[in-house]
Image (cartoon, rainbow, N blue to C red; front, side, top):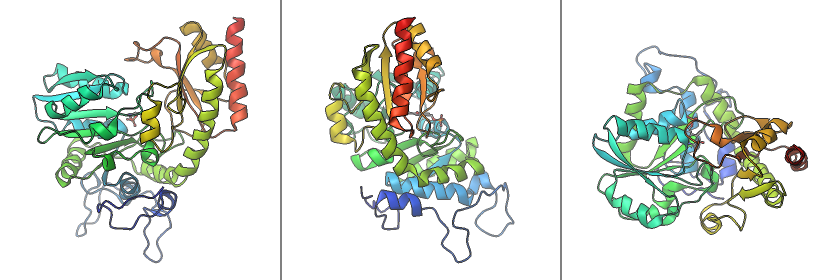
Amino acid sequence: MTIRDTGHNSRVLGSVESWLVSAGRDRRPGSPLNVPPCPASNFVLGERRAYSRDDATPGWEALEEIVGGLEGGSSVAFASGMAGIAAIFDQLPTGSVVALPDDCYQGVAGLAKVGQSRGRWTLHRVAVTDTARWIEMCSLADLIWLESPSNPLLTVADLDTICTAPRKRGAILGVDNTFATPLNQRPLALGADVAVQSITKFIGGHSDLLGGVVTVTDANLLAGLRQARELAGATPGTLETFLAVRGARTLALRLERAQQNAMTLAERLSRHPNVTLTRYPGLASHPTHEAARRQLKGFGTIISFDVRGDALAADAVCAGVKLIQHATSLGAVESTIERRASITGQEHLPPALLRLSVGIEAVEDLWSDLDRALRKVAEV
Ligand SMILES: *Cc1c(COP(=O)(O)O)cnc(C)c1O
């Protein structure tokens, strides 16, 4: 895959794999190959940097350069994905209209609901697949928020149609691109104004940090996001950005391996006697498989499936796996599994739905772990 130069990055970017390995480095003679952590709040006055909440540290900028190149825009790094998303919502004037998918990250749904209850905006929930309604929302709403594939049902929105629909003057169309990663999907190239990555997930990739990066193409929006970060103080930590850059170096390899594993596991799960439904955009049986094929370079590493029986049966699978970690979050080297309806704000989901984030372990080890845990359920 070749990164197209949108003009927001001065360099010729070349292939994603090489960009991930080479971007965000200080090339001056004598510089360390990797930008070291810079534990500084303030700097000797007289140069560009005075105070890091206002002026960033070199480590944040390295991460911003890497992700900006991948997404095809200019990036702002935040303390978490939610901090970045909150900064986007913060751009809205009071009395705005927000359109949000019916299936989306529970933190974003929570943020939108709280804002509505405080009179900041009115909220419309729209089914991910209701493209006609999304097009309508583009001309009505001030913020059109999309997440594709969605969490945890993995529904793929018709982004290429929605992102090019005529928008209300000044409206912001944002895409949470965390599940796809910029390697599988580039919303800005499709016409979105904002692409969001929770760095906590695939780019960090090792379950050891919180971070977020928001990427935009509009200079005013970029200035607004930087101001929001500065005023709210939602700045990324220096160790976190160092680790995120380290994680980004291997993103292409990790994603390729985990995606292969996910495809194999999804196919086998879909035939398992103790699984009643398997959702994976790569399966022909998935309701939005065609959109996934059209829009995504790869089908991702997340599978959600329903265990035969009730919540207790699904909990028993989580308790039964040994190699797979019973933990929340996703996008790391290790596979994690979780019953999503047990999460606050996700009680509406099927009670026996498990979300599996597939890691880079040997696929046969993952399968025997899952299969053993699933078979035990039948014996209960
Ligand atoms: C995790 C996640 C977020 C929030 O990111 P944090 O880094 O946890 O704040 C937002 N959107 C999606 C899709 C996520 O998976």
